Image 1: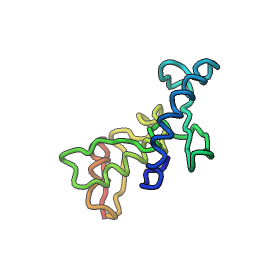
Image 2: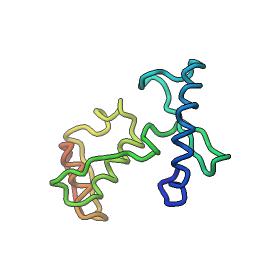
Image 3: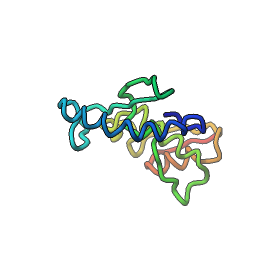
Image 4: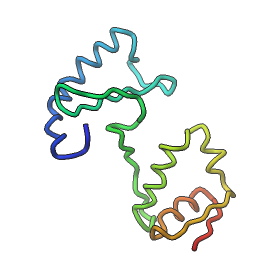
Length: 128
């Protein structure tokens, strides 16, 4: 379901649909009783009650990462960069690709949120 007012009308239907779908997937041995990083996440995206898309591209509920805004961050843009890390960099590569001491450039498109995110990871940040 998309996060829009029109799509929220499908919420009641989706809640009713979830229980039987979950039961059938468990009985078929497709789904586990618990989450496992070794098994894919299945997302069912309803556009109307009679039509949906099925995929496994996002581990986040409704495809939206729920990130906590740090109290000392200068802007919410810091969350956009953190979201990009989750979406574009596999978790097992974070230590290598977001390592302390690395160098980054912030071209000043945001009010310090990205610099904050990089400095928080102990990177050297050059600003323009």
